[in-house]
Image (tube, rainbow, N blue to C red):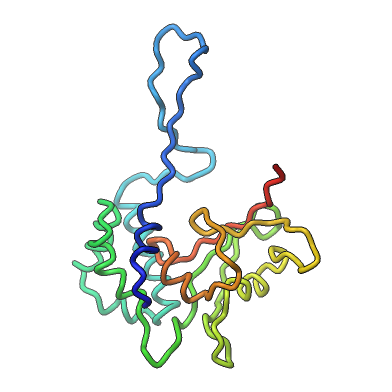
Length: 206
């Protein structure tokens, strides 16, 4: 794995703090306290921390099955699994990455993982969710890029050379270059569950 902790730290410490407050001219009988809202209609509310932990570890295991045939996660001890979860739960970068780095390694004689764990989300098509097997390295040894993945899974997201840009491809709220190697993205921009979560949204018009 490329030693690029600056990228890993920037991703880890990224935040979107949200607070709702009433407009100052709104008339209320009493002062309304700021509200920090969970979107119940859009997201499933997990019933407990145990349920979240179970789902998280299930995703990590699925990702490792794709990357290493489950060899890495199966060789870890139960305390390693717990440290991975506790590092995430307590927002401890070093604690989390002391274990997670093992999931991001691959044999020196290979150029990447067996398959890239990814999920693509789009709201403007009949296929809002895409997940399939995709290798980070082509048969000729060339590294596959983000653009290669999109051409294979949802070519409509790619802007033709002579066309107008209609979509944004976002990972962690940023728009990586389509020429970026998929292996690098998987190592550095995967979410804590070890998947690349890629959103395709319409290009803003304003």
